[in-house]
Amino acid sequence: MSVYTLVVTTPPHQNNTATVIEFAESILTAGHQINGIFFYQDGVLNASTLTSIPNDEFQAPAAFVKLLNDHQVALHLCITAGEKRGLTDQDGVININPAFTVSGLGEMVELTSTADKVIQL
Image 1 (cartoon, helix red, strand yellow):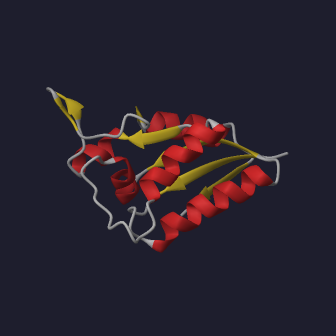
Image 2: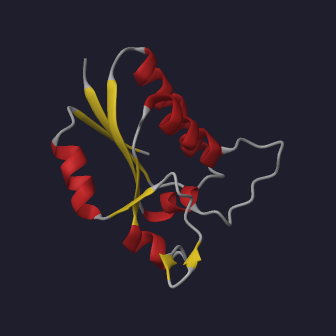
C-alpha cells in the first residue's frame, strides 16, 4: 500500500480536474491511501461557493466533497491562493465550501513529506 498526496492546480471546469477525481478513485479502489488533496493556484476555485457549473457538465466540486464523505480524504485549500482569487472566510463573508480546510503551504509540505508519492495535476 502506498500513500499519495494529490495537488490540484486546475479550476473545476477543466478536464484535468476530472482526471484528478478519477485517479483518486482508482487509487482508493486499488487499496492505496490518500493522505490529502491540496488545492493550489487556480485549483482553489474548486472550493468556491460562487462557482456555478451547468447541470449537464461534470460537477467537480461535488465530486471532491463525495471523496471526503465516502473516504475521509482531507481537502486542503491554500488560503493565499484563495485570497488572490476572491475566496475568503473573514469579516462575515464566507464563500469557501465548508468541506474544505483552510490551510497554507506548510500543510502541503507536511502532506508531501508523509506521502510515498505526490501527483500534481
